[in-house]
Length: 183
Image: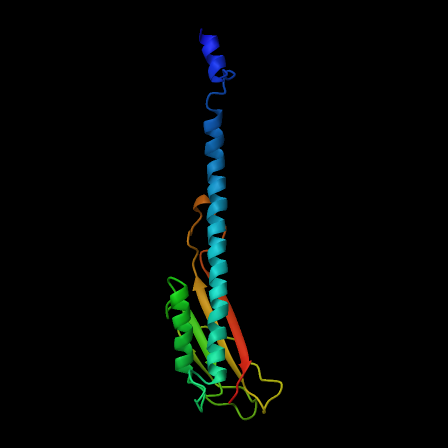
């Protein structure tokens, strides 16, 4: 009767010493699988941050080089208005982005242009970061480059060494966009 019931239910008796094998395999595999999942979540988050950091300076430099909000504007917008646009874009796109972890440098012809190097003068906003020197436009003095640099320090969503998270605790992403000014 016992053998018939076992055959009917499809159960087979395990060999001696294999009673806890599946529990052991699960205990060994689970941290590995969680580590892969958590690293994929962090990589996806970093990819999203890179996309947001690519869009913010591009919008700001377009705003700076095309003259601001209205086509009737006679002069280019100031550096504060341009940096506010960057901060607005980043704080709306990335949770945790603030003026304390986002550095912005705006080089625009509205601030002025160095008469010898023909490089637009710059203002920096946010935490101290050493941005590289602004390049001169190869067609200067006819044109001046407007340039917006953004530096963001991002922490992973799932930090630490738990579950084999291999990404560093803080990464700094830098994006720079240049565009010729219409002014």
